[in-house]
Image (tube, rainbow, N blue to C red; front, top):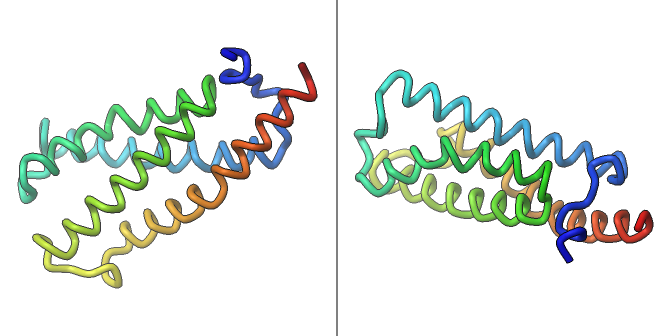
Length: 140
């Protein structure tokens, strides 16, 4: 069972590797953004937001790179974490955009890109989940 949770990167088809690299680059970009926010504003830098949002966004500084690590070493866990991060982050950011930033999705380019990545992730994770299982069972 554990072997199935940790398939070898070298066993993945090229398309699977490419999609995982896209995931990892997007989470790396998000990590960079959160690190820069903390660098500029200190710990819990999102002072315009309620504390619970501030804590959530700051926690992404650790969760986003954890998703990258899990995607590489334990892809099933990585995909679960990636989906949880994106569902919660899109929901939180939509709520924040409309409730206390008095903005909308049409003027928030970051939110637009995040939603596009989320859609890509949500559509491709089920495919990768099956592909990884079939590629590792062939090599076993």
